[in-house]
Length: 326
Image (cartoon, rainbow, N blue to C red; front, side, top):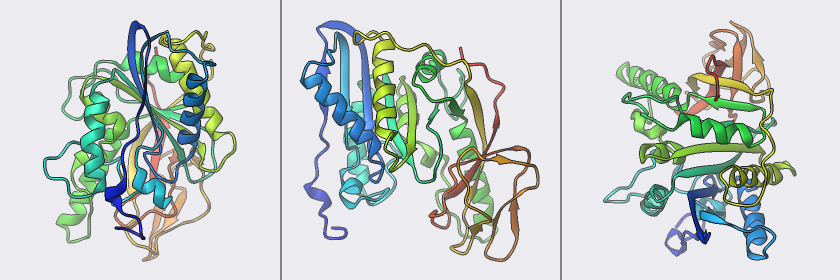
């Protein structure tokens, strides 16, 4: 029990629609983080449109999960016992609520070919999408569906697309291990802790896109999510809908590194918004001991989190990517 809420009372509610002709299997998740309501609202609208015949699934299978972490949603917090979107994998001996969700969610993801995960963020800013790596046979995140993933991401609507999550996270883990070896406190020193819904989906052969629909409470955020899923369904030929052409001004950024908050006294020098420009050497934050955290080069700040717990991600640094999305 947490804050008077019993975690053993929850179920994972799944809505599934089968077209009568063969086609892709797509799953859409909302509220992986319990305080991110936009995705749930967008999915509720999709369910209503499908149930009332305003939207008809012609082919394939569509699975909708409006509330992926019901404990966190009931608490209206990012996490329940922990962050569901980290260290996502089945486990024989569940240790917390998120482990039990993962034991249901991971097999469900594996039954699909594609995933769209709808999120929102704390600070102000424009919607954006996150995609995985280019096709590769490496150890960190082997992948073979980069072109399909990029095709979907380009049609979802937002101007910005971000790549490089796992490589940036792995570098952050290396730094945490170094701090730990030097006697400093370090959490999450396993690179697999960076695996969330989309990374797990890729690990079982699917493609996956995270859509950050906007600021948590922004009134347009649910509409961004609804529009994006409708675009994807049309693009995949699952509904009668000619998707809008992809915009011609996409900006592709690559996450280069992550900086952790090390102490509750660490603070930003100002209120940052994702994708604010940074100049090399510009002050970003001040550690509790007075040392200054500066930008390593020209680039952008991404996911600045003033509420980050010590030992967890404080902000990411990104630069323009040379990758061409096809």
